[in-house]
Length: 402
Image 1 (cartoon, rainbow, N blue to C red):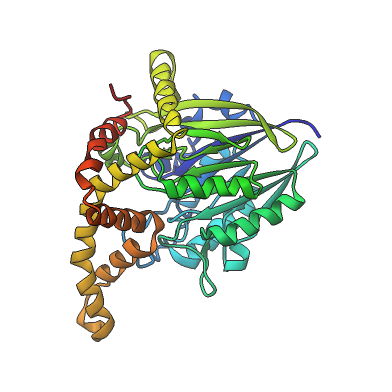
Image 2: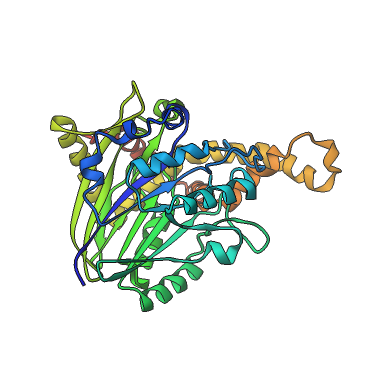
């Protein structure tokens, strides 16, 4: 077997200006400044965070129902991506029609995919790829927000660590390299939660050669655990959504990871920082001082991952910051949600309260904030936890705290 180089990019949602470029036949412009890096690989993979469909059949959920025109598949091709990860909380935003159209579109363009299907069993199929004498298994899981497959519905491959560990072990027995992709974590948090760290490390112990995660919309650090790299968030790759930049200056600045495998072991890790240009939405490599500052920032985030106690303190700070907001949402929505279950549905023009309550309770990232914050209240530790809030808000700007 020869060494194999795999390039990983974060979340691709080709909407707004990027979608228009694809419709105009100019998708290449989005990536032309990154082509040298995008071509330096044997395989590359990106997460597609919306269906590519003409269908408008939005599922009931909280948050936006995203989609892009099928011609936006040209963005995947222009980026030279070989594999698409579909396991995320938006891929089924337009139901079975939108998802099936997306999967058919990828097949028609000879683009391989993993992480979603028309049933639970098909969604949970690993993708096996032969490359330079190596059999590579890709598995892709999504936290249980909206759009995960179950026994009756299409959707993404659900995150279920006990089941996922068994799936990883089976893949390990038959493949030379096992890549685990996860879409999860807390949006806009610069540091992963202890639950996330514990889960991704368990995936390595089960046989993952590397764990690559997305979803927080900003970059997080990475570590090498038991000889396997774990990237906690690659951030956004292409996500042309102006409101995102208002919420975080890191919405449009992140990095790709390039891993060179020798057998099942990573021999080299490459970090490729980039940004989306505010004027056009197209990508450009960071260079000079801007690149140095970003790499120093990423190094700071990664250093925190070496100290489990420090991870916990940052997590408590995050819960002290976000917990009151989520608890307020829960307290306002849950009484109406309860009424919706006992009164005729026609009494309510919207199931918004039910959907919001469900999201806060069943999505792992939201649930853990609520449970941790209430535990901090019970232990009278909220004020101590708040001491880390200034560090967190500084990191959210892309700067290293003094």
